[in-house]
Image (cartoon, rainbow, N blue to C red):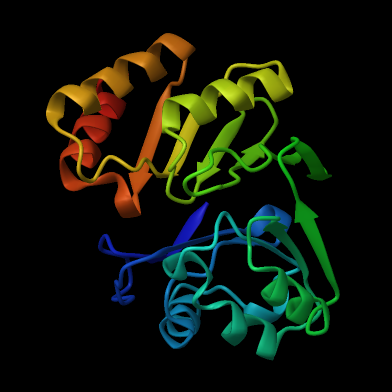
Length: 218
């Protein structure tokens, strides 16, 4: 996945703001849309991502820093299919259906989207959130924030595709966790068989350092 919006530093002088978005070129899918549409579009241009190439947008959850750029994208490219959680405002979902090609609303059950892509279904109650599973030889998951707990998301994903998850990327939701909690999460993910880690956004600098060091050891 190519990260196009993040509060962590980006390449090619792209601007960092609070929020997250990434692009899966192989599937022409944009995962979340960051907090600011103007900056998202500028970053995409700098990073060589053509907004008109996008065919799908996956929204993990309703927080502003993950949906803030959606209007800017669909204004330029309305010919997209949106995969949105049912926890999104019903009024927003109704409006989006008039603005794009198709809106697929994902509920609590896991759902096959297309090709080798699956939604975990919305997980959690305080902040319901869906994560994206990319199946294949080395299956991986992308988490927007990981409110449900990244280790819990991995466990759910492995049950859905009946395979070990090879890589986890996106928000690990460990920003306010102490080192003991971060290491506990790390050990559980290793126990699950996860081999690669790419924490971003709300993972927190300490978690990013710990998991990046782990990548170098494997």
